[in-house]
Image 1 (cartoon, rainbow, N blue to C red):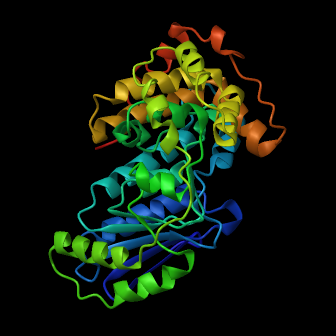
Image 2 (spheres, one colour; image 1 turned 90 degrees about the horizontal axis):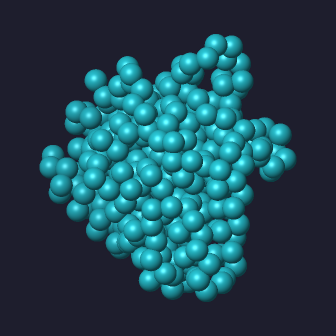
Image 3 (cartoon, rainbow, N blue to C red; image 1 turned 30 degrees about the vertical axis):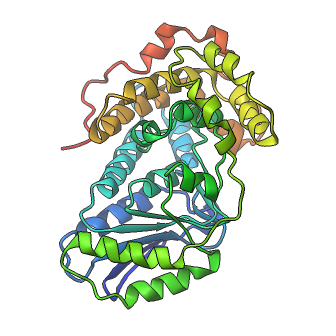
Length: 360
């Protein structure tokens, strides 16, 4: 396997470790293809009864996609039209995420530390999503002129009313307690219990029936689970968030959130909204509204079309530049303010692109 992935089979468990601590295990093309290849190999392998997916180091499971490489590809492109590097990455990543959602064998993700963007895509398709008290979750795409992708069109729409809009538009960070209460995670285990969990998995007598194996893993995780002892950041706001459920404009979002009781978490989240791409804000609103009527497969297909449009628009490249390349934190968005984002501009992101195909 590649240097960016560590993989092996041990006592019925297929282990996959993202191995790029320097980038907080951000997903690149090589990693995505490597994981996809392993899942395909292990699909019918009787030596593999479940998958354990984790990240190397203590800081992150996966901080997102390796968007620096996409920036380089966009900068180097000399001809107009779809950027092949971006297209290949989006296709590979979304196919992998969909494969995790639909995989016949149990998949366990160890989401200690930072799990954001592409990491959330890996996590949310898994059958057993484990956080630790040190976990931080977010979908921060509005800060780079993108939108919550990797299946968030579908899994964010499973959340309580209005919450998808708030989390997507503000890139709000969630802690382990939030993840559990919002059903974005299934178990909280101590950070130092990873080796113990792996040991117990390796001692398990696996069955040929994946459903029985899922129950065995649930029992192990339940036995090792703990209370987070961390106050939820979102619980007191759930009634407030419900007011956002039927909004149709960003102006409504702004007006309603002004009535929310203040806290440092809310203030920081709304500050990110104001600093984020106005175009992304409009796109996110439309994306999530459309996503309510889509199946999981349809959601991924819609994301491919939308992501390619984002790669053709100025804010995606500019957002990456300001955040990760020049790091000046002062992106020059186009348009610059929410009031200048027209419905025609938003609609242009959703125009079907001929020839795009996510699934064979």
